[in-house]
Amino acid sequence: VLNEESVEESLREIRRVLLEADVNYRLVQDFLGSVKEKATGKEVIKSVSPGQMMVKIVYDELVEMLGGSSKPLSLLPGQLTVIMLCGLQGSGKTTTAGKIARRFKNDGRKPMLVAADIYRPAAAEQLETLAGQLDLPAFSSPDTEKGVAGIIKDALIEANSRGLDTVLIDTAGRLQIDRVMMDELIQIKKAVNPQEILLVVDGMTGQEAVNIAESFHRELDLTGLVLTKLDGDARGGAALSIYGVTKVPIKLIGVGEGLDALEVFHPDRMVSRLLQMGDIVSLVERAEERMDTEEAGRLEKKMLSQGDMDLEDFLSSISQMQKVGSMESLLRMIPGVSGKILKTLNLDP
Image (cartoon, rainbow, N blue to C red; front, side, top):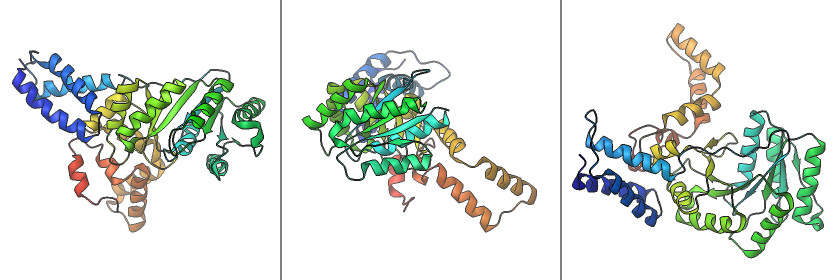
């Protein structure tokens, strides 16, 4: 049986891990109280140790705290789906629009990117460049007198006339939340009634991400979140904090700068990373998606038949690894690799 003393000892380590990951302090306290209540007095199964039993209880509670399971984007079958992206400047909103568009294209949909930022210089050009890289249509208008809502309505007419099925609206960001910004976003929401309103949040901002998400959710009734920049030091504390406070589901996560660096959010995998248990499933999926299977097959065949490799083969292997991600982001997915150890290593100079 798990006694109170052994539970308290385990919870001290869990508290440290969660606070290091920048999880909201109040949430940590509530979470630990819930775990203590469920764990104390629980009978330990003969085949596992008390420590393993505690890990299982903590793991299950954290997964539940993040929503339990992945939540897909709401897409209308047979008619135009409108997705509105909002967020502060620097959160990666425009790039995320491109990443989502790429994902839709690979899934067989016909997306169009819409530049609804009429304030930031070169905002439309940035979106058009992304669309060009993806060989997808983009819509922008020099006629700012129509207002943002008018421009977006024109974009929807254009999308319908071209037989497209998805429109991604890249709205204007601000350096900080202000009333003018929110009023414009509310106006867009009323004008086009989007199926999804996604807030793009920088995963490295920690506790500030919670305040940002709360402000946007209060005004717009968000349908989902996209957490970006989760390939570096951010281990998911922002994810726990945001969902714990707002209950808005995290639908996607950005794990790098490339247009292919976007993943569906899986609470169980995020918890594995958070508890330093690794995330082998995501590592395999990322490798399958980004690596050149033909080139990998050629190298494998050569190694098996000849037993050696030349410098060209070595360069090809390194290039394949770089496509999967930085060395640090890959090591974070390996079970048992501590974040403290990674900080002492200069892996990606």
